[in-house]
Length: 414
Image (cartoon, rainbow, N blue to C red):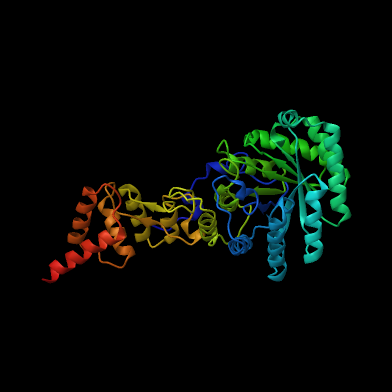
């Protein structure tokens, strides 16, 4: 049978009628919050400076355009770390634009200005202020005073040649007119970018779209809009994509979604989905290494069933799945084998579909396992491994299968 075109082998319901998700502004950038917001998780271990430098290089390797490198207003130890990270960007010519978080107080912005002047690298100030009625009530904040703080902090940043992203915390629960006044004040004071923060993970995709479109009408087309999401409801990736569809210019996230409470939007999953959607075309073969590096250095476990980079993402111990993969490989088409039971190609991140042998397996699993390791799938050997698998309570370890192979060969030779 003649080989079919790839498009004939997958009918994509995602793209019929209105078509797939598309970013309203044409291109979407990413901002990596791993080294700042990600480290606010109560379960993380703060990485060493050397580890942070390694993570910074991993961010650059993935083509992520910018990164939050800290909040210098937290004290001298953060100032020293931020300065070193920005020096690394400068000295190694890393294609990553640094930004730093700051409250809307001059004491937080002054050290950012000093670091920028000393190192000779522009650092975007991400100055933030709570915006929702519930936050204002809890803090006993007066909106007029909040507006004065916004104007003062943004003007101070601009006067010190620092680009500004003004962030309202808890934007997704804030009143429209409060947001209009806060963002208008920031833009009039010189902010070139604003950020919508779904601080407590309240948003839905429709809410994200409505909010982005509303604020685009407030700030106009020249001011850029960011989306910063959290995954409390488990829909942060979808929210971020919806925000971009509505006109957000940049999406924030962290490696494997580390961050406050249950975490931030996973930037690794944003990268994969953006590539699947055709928004980007870049090499993701270092994605797993990046995620495992952050997991190791922060002490946050990477679950086996984590999407794309988890140990089980491209492994199967099921007979029907293995049989389909085996048949695909026998057609001599690795593209087919990589997609027949996977919506995400393992090859994108430098992996291959793996077939394991266990109690849910068929003989096709054994054949795949043996052939993948250069063994001839002789019927007697296949049968012996298959029987052992059926008696096991989990997938057989490689050493167990190899021991069966060795024993079988020794008996054959005697």
